[in-house]
Length: 163
Image (cartoon, rainbow, N blue to C red; front, side):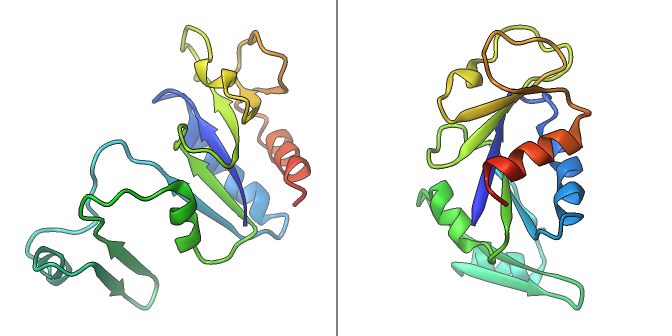
């Protein structure tokens, strides 16, 4: 599977950009999955529900299934997993849009700087960064796109990843 990452400060617009890129790729006939890094713990479950009770009892994996979707929760129990391992868990698709995981190697990235976010783009110093999304000029000789240039960004990614 081909993947492209998006890195930047919190509030830079990474999620919004990815949300807008998904339909642009789907319109090209591509299947798209996403993978987002969460810095803080999260839980899609609720105390008292059967699935929560199964996990609390020690189940390593719990699957929830309904007619419209299913979800598989895996308890890591202090076992670290890499971006590569997480991507291997995804169903085959044409493109994975990855948000975060800036310290993980192996995929090309686009640095995103939010409107009114002062300072330098420290992520743009990463050699895996192939472009910048910023409405302001940047001091690096990489292709630069503005946040609203979704079609151009999708085209750039499709060309670069040979989709």
